[in-house]
Image 1: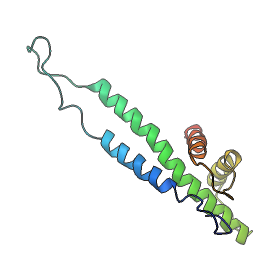
Image 2: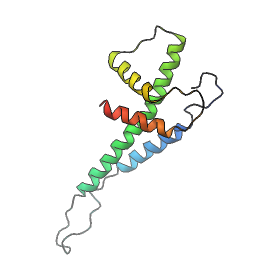
Image 3: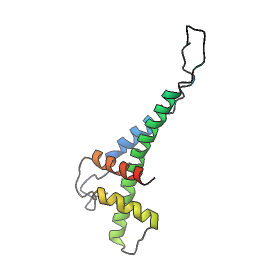
Image 4: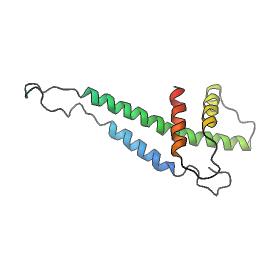
Length: 129
C-alpha cells in the first residue's frame, strides 16, 4: 500500500495477524475440564475460573492488536482513495476514528517496523470503545 509500489508497506504484518488469530484461538480452549482433585482428593470440583478470566483478558488484548492491523490497512486504503478522489467522505464516527488513527500513525511511504504502529493504534481503539 505504498503509492510508488516500490515498498512492501503492510505486507509483513500478515504474519502478525495470522499469529494473533492463532493465539486467540488457543486461548479459547476450555480450562474448566482440566481440574486436579482437591482437598486431599476429597473434592473433585474446581472451576479454574481465574485461569479462564486470564485467558479472556489475553484474548481481548490480542483482539485489540488484531483490530489495529485491520485498522492500519483500512486507514491506508481510505487515505489512498482520498488522494485519488477528494469527494470521498466518511461517516461521522468513522471519520473520528480515522482522524485519531492517522494522528498517531503517519502514512507508510517507506518501509519501517510496524510494531510501534500496531501498538499505537491498539491504544487508540481501546480509548474509542
